[in-house]
Image (cartoon, rainbow, N blue to C red; front, top):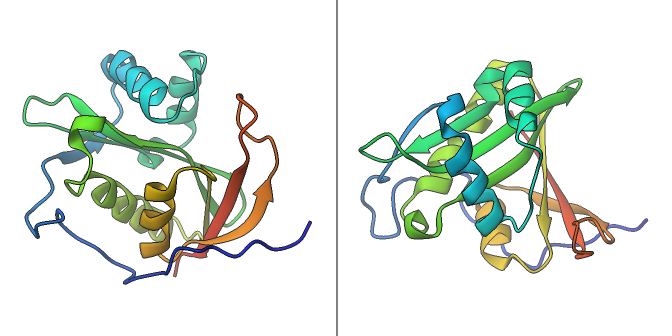
Amino acid sequence: MGWVRCIAEPGPAQFRGTEDGGEPSATLRGFHPSDLDTIMEIVAEGLHEHYDPTLYGTLSAAWPEGFLVAADELDRPVGFLLGVNQTPGEGRVLMFAVDRAARRRGVGTLLMEAFLERCRRRGLHRATLEVRVSNAAAIRLYARFRFSVVDLLRGYYSDGENGYQMARDVA
């Protein structure tokens, strides 16, 4: 399969705060089993996917530091990033979504910065993820973090939509 070039222009490697320069409207913590229903709602709305509920606990147990939750002032999840380390030297963003009401407030940036830092601390040298080809906002966010498209994944999603695999060096 040939290489696919990303049409989004990479920006700075780091981006903090909200679009207006303020601080993100969430704090980071680990996954709690009580988060499951809210996270599944965020996944259904944001990723258009439905997964077996036991998957979240199983993956969290494998690398607890890779499952990051952004919570509001009442400690309710408003976004999350579920990262796994199944391949030596590589961290993979398996799921990443922010509730529609919390988007464009720095929550996604907060989650991605923390994930990349946890990959560095774990000694990983590469980070990968998959994204729907139609998700231009996510592709722009990933490009700001220096992710580049490395492959086109035909029919990757459950509804048949194609995906891009994106990757970057972690160091």
